[in-house]
Image (tube, rainbow, N blue to C red; front, side, top):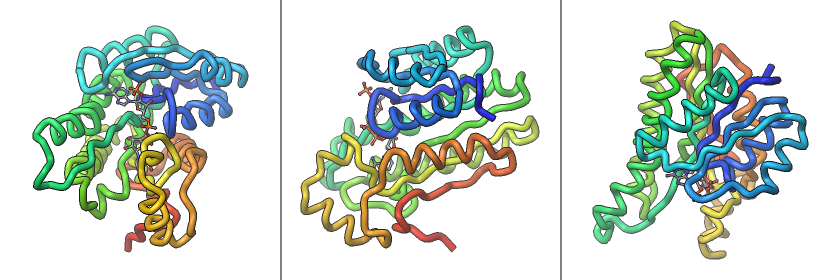
Length: 244
Ligand SMILES: NC(=O)c1ccc[n+]([C@@H]2O[C@H](COP(=O)([O-])OP(=O)(O)OC[C@H]3O[C@@H](n4cnc5c(N)ncnc54)[C@H](OP(=O)(O)O)[C@@H]3O)[C@@H](O)[C@H]2O)c1
């Protein structure tokens, strides 16, 4: 179902985004990679070893011009944009009382505004195509909140509201929009946490282990290949958050 489709993945140089790129390449999709700094040649080589094409657009998605360039180049290169995965995200953890305005703004700008930017840019293309799938990377803390992450949790809760609104606006043209709420996944983002924090987190996970990027990537492929799921938040978290 994904063979020769075009998948744009923001923040795909490492971590979950890298895992998404490899998984969608295995499914036969052409991949448009993005990050602010660089995409390693080894990653491009690995993706293309699955017989698909890649295109790299470096840029910072918090800026509308960069988001526009990413989506425009994807369409010009491959002729369509079938799946957009808004994966790029950052943390600037700090307790509320000590959080600087810049720490709040930068996280909202990348995680929430960045998701809005690329989604708005892709929507005209998908509306014309009368098809497309948007997948937004939220987080379980967007559902539960987390001490020390007021900025990050707010951005990820915002992504959920954005996801549901976009799902409602675009559904009549056959476009789906869903969010994935990862729990604790082993990447650079979580590597900075101390062993003590990691152990305390694992203790709270019913499945008693950290998640892997492949767990998220498989959920994304599922959402991209199911045309009757929209406006949902899929938790991939080892059972951390169980919604009624
Ligand atoms: N790891 C977890 O446990 C976990 C849990 C819940 C949710 N998430 C979410 O999952 C997503 C991926 O997380 P991760 O753990 O894979 O993070 P990561 O390892 O830190 O990777 C983040 C990726 O995003 C890129 N990026 C950051 N800011 C960007 C910007 N402004 N514009 C474009 N690209 C940008 C980074 O490359 P550059 O630095 O070169 O730009 C990198 O490729 C994030 O949205 C995160 O909030 C992760």
